[in-house]
Length: 108
Length: 151
Image (cartoon, rainbow over all chains, first blue to last red; front, side, top):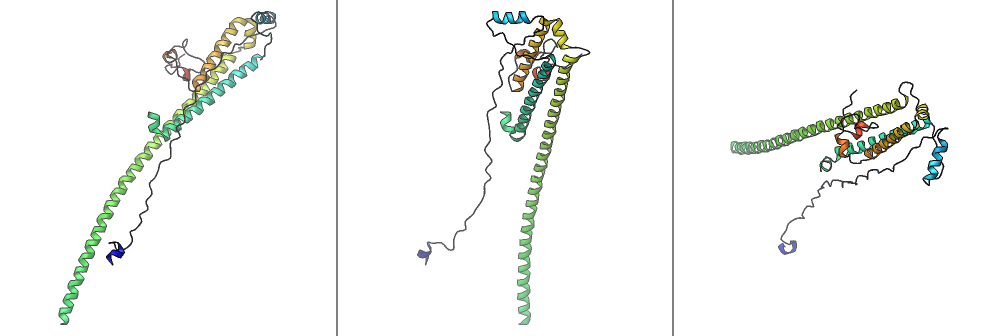
């Protein structure tokens, strides 16, 4: 009888336990900062127009200008300021989320 | 005979009762330990909630401050174009060269603000700037952390 049961009495109970495995960290690298090209603004009026175009030709630049009125220039300046603020706001938001959910990684 | 049976049953009953009391006692002790452990873990949860709440408040405050500085920067930009009865177009006609220099300087500053907003490192000069003449007037709060606005 002992030989038949393999020296044991009754079946062993299977124990099932779960271990919580934390989700892998995303850890995406921060995007590279912008390095912008320098843009040159030229003011052209009815009085200096000839002189401006002549200078452009002398410098070997096509004598053509893409124009904005003073009001449109103001608008473009304000639009750029808003784009910059949105960029800054989004980056800050991302940083705060990271700090909140991954405090250890942020400290490093 | 009957008395003897009654005595045996009585003793056996008392024995069973004692065993039950011991078992109850052990259960109560285990319950007590569980409750103490539970209170301790509840304390930890409360402490964590408190820390989380403070962190959320701090983040909100930071973002609100940022939005306030955005508004101020936009107002300052508007003032540069429209302060008093300033007409940039007319000024550009009268003093073309000077305004061209100012516009180009402003555009360079605005571009630098964009770079910083995208995560560029500050230069030493930007970090040290404390005077109006040293700052980037397009975004002083972002470009010059050491600068405190004054009139």
